[in-house]
Image (cartoon, rainbow, N blue to C red):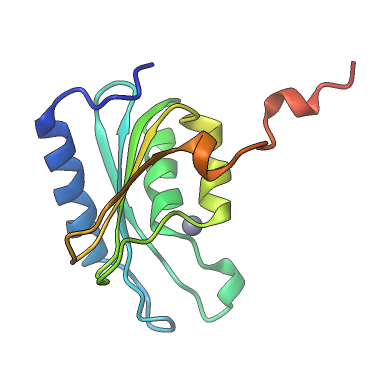
Length: 140
Ligand SMILES: [Zn+2]
């Protein structure tokens, strides 16, 4: 799978979807509203927002919710992940989300955008070197 987005419009659509998803974030505890959008291998786009819980540990990030929506729709690969936070600086995916991205999009382009001009465009090997992967489960 290519790490490049299929077209410039894909990038714009992903960013728009991530921003829109943040509006649906359920974040009454942190008030940190996050939206994410992923471009799946089929070319379809899926979005997600963070969903918090009074039992904090049950909170799920926007990135994982977007990825799980893609998987629920039958996708198994990711070409790109976009994360939007309404902050002056862009926010990279947390460690848990990096591990989930590794499962479905080890070559995905990972982009963080915010309300400021700065953005982060990176790849999984840069965010999660030495990752735990399926090959580590082999016993022989
Ligand atoms: Zn996360």
